[in-house]
Image (tube, rainbow, N blue to C red; front, side, top):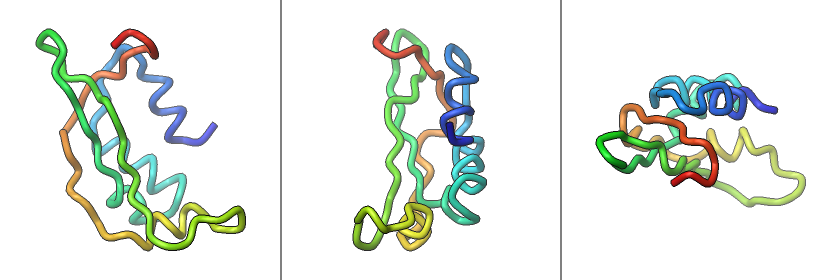
Length: 92
């Protein structure tokens, strides 16, 4: 499991910040990768839930492509929401 997957699974039921997610992408895919990740959140009964992660890439996606290089080649994007709760799968 990547550091990104570990961060998210370790915080199920708790709050994770966009800065933490972006830092995990930097560690897993190289410096600057996190700047290409946008976090989308939604409200749910007063809570803010992390709904989606948009990972921006640029280049040709192929079996030989190195995902970190594709991510780092994309333009930086706004971070999206600042933080949200990681809900267990299937509860939303």
